[in-house]
Length: 238
Image (cartoon, rainbow, N blue to C red):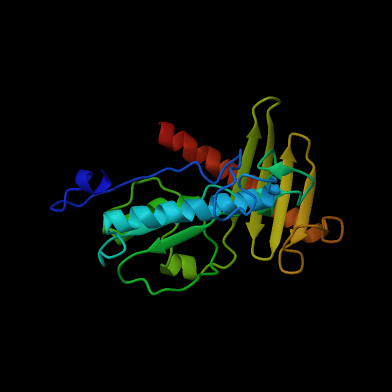
């Protein structure tokens, strides 16, 4: 059905959204060894869901012929990670710790050499990157940078912002990553945590008291970014 829907004589943009891997986690054979018997641990079921999704994508790519087409652009991106007791919880509840806020992004496009970039990247980079690859002009107001471009390569200290809202009580959780440092802030309570990503990538040791200057600098940067985001939203609405 997918191949029948594609017009070989016209450029085609196709968006596919998949819920897997997502709770409730199924025990997917053959990757979960206890299918039909004892229950796998949550991490085992989750991994089996990941492998199941990988197999489904392989079938889609084979049917569509995208990977065989040297001119095709294929972008895979996840929306968030998953927690399995890393900070005392499971799945992806009200938290912005790294195990939830980190996401995967894989891009295959003409002219891109295989490799792995360590440059900071964000979901907001999807639109400018695709527009650049297609030689299309960007809109007047747009967040993000072109991945693989000079702006991405020249800014290792680029700030990356994460936010979650608890609609029940109006709380916000903010995460700001700048280079080696990661700031977490809850509003309106003002609770803060600071982590050194280079020495503590799992975010176990809060160094906010030991690094007051870094904490103050990042909190000021976070406040500026929030104000800029509010102004940008106002411009888009107007």
